[in-house]
Picture 1: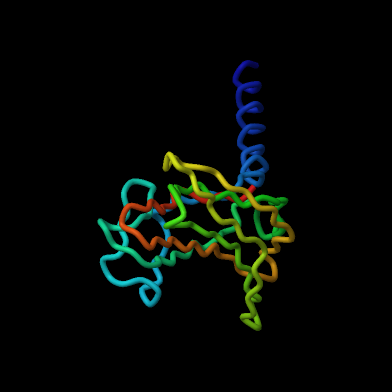
Picture 2 (picture 1 turned 90 degrees about the vertical axis):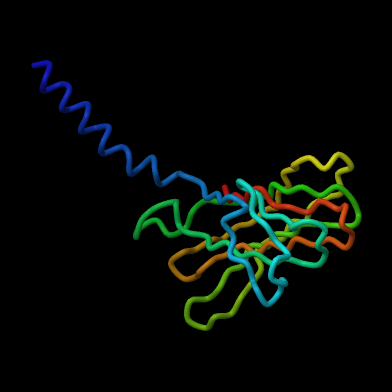
Amino acid sequence: MKSIIRITVLAALVLALPAAAQTMDWNMAGSAGNVDEQAANAGLYAFTGTNAHFRGANVGQIVLRYPVTNTYGSFNSKMPGWTTMELAATDNGANGFVTARLVQVDRCSNVETTLGTVTSTDDDNGGVQCHLVNVAGIDFGNFIYYIEVTLARNAAGAQASVQSLALY
């Protein structure tokens, strides 16, 4: 009898896993971005742990792109309830910034639409801050998505780095 109960409980847990997985949010480490080599000079950027940042005293702009995948559901669950994009970034003053924009791409026409943009704010202590922007209407059935992050600095002492991105 105990074996039947254990098997029944185990089966219920296994069947519940896909439903639980459908509510997962999307997140990505800053170091996982694809670098736009046309927008950044070779050797301008570096990756350390989860961070994407400027290498040494380099100045300029670094553009990174992060493909957004449907972690929400399956073939039948194409519209996650995500309404927020989060950027975890470091920006220690007016000589640098980090901007992230969520881009929706029509699968057939390739027309791009920006759903939300968030930019870091100057933080004198250079610590990681989370910045939020409202986004809505994500539909994996008809569109492809990516987040484009721009790191910029015009002085060697400026900190501009991205640690992570999230949609929830």
